[in-house]
Figure 1: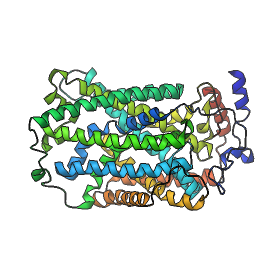
Figure 2: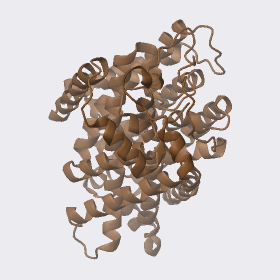
Figure 3: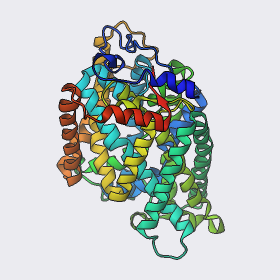
Length: 502
């Protein structure tokens, strides 16, 4: 072990032209020879199709299906339109996922959206993406899921009818983040295997809700689903659906997780398109059936008033077995959080390797072959957000930035076709698909800002502007704090990590 570390220590990133691996200039092929230095540590290709499907399903089915129905119903203002929104969000997510299949097979590298925008638009755009993901999106996603998990764990642990104190929720959320960080630092095999097990458990929990709803349908409990009344009172302003769609798309978020893991798939050209084609339709069907089940026993007002929709539903339909649903929520959110720490840190890892983030983030554990520093960074920022933010503000704060990046990534389909026309494309999507995805992205960026402006949008744009300043000073200006070399060496020794190669 000491000998291995000595080898990678000798090849750590340094300033100036010795830092060649951090400076990539794509030529006529996006997979040109970016890394010219022989590094010794590499990510392992340990994931096949089943694990890829499990990761997508686990990432998508998290706390959203238990929280978002209220936000969607509040924005749609009717049962019928809320169900339409669930279908629309599933359809648009599938279109976006198809775009990412082409992008992922053209650029089968860790980093997902970051890689696509970097190769399509250049260094500045690539840095903004890495900054947004590392500082805003990935930690915010982990914080959201862990807060939900902490809420349900607190309900189990703390007796009484009153809501658990916020301090308890934060404590359990932070403990959850810590556990998931540890598992992902130790092994990709353990974390992806855990995702498979938790995915099966969470799907079973939702199938229990769906089965209970079907029983209610056979009993004739359709008063809130009748087409003649279910659309009454629907929001008439199209832009007014923007916030409702944010909640819907947040519930569907995670379809791009496997794109961040391309260097760890056994057969990327086969597994990526198949995993998308299997996972996204399954999740869409489960979400729609689950919401129909909710409305067999809950009126719109009761659903909006409930602090935990799934628990209220279970109490009215499952009797003494109602405890199964809260347990299922905990399993569901735990699986999503585990998948978040499996996929999310790969963006910081890829950005560090390209010279857009601290070089320590590009390094891999010599013992475990995992991007350990990047995983720890995501966990620490998520803990800060848990201590500072609340659920709704984090959703709004992260969603506006996410859709700006999706817009750029969907447009990158056309840009990369023009820049790299001779690159093999195992999967090429019809041009109408990215066009529709681009239109949807523009709507999602503008509609909420116009119809319901919030301070969270301003905070997000300020952080992006701060990222531009960091790029100008430290990346393009090539300035470096005087202690960074020593800090990098210290972290290498502390975490036993070394430079990586694609």
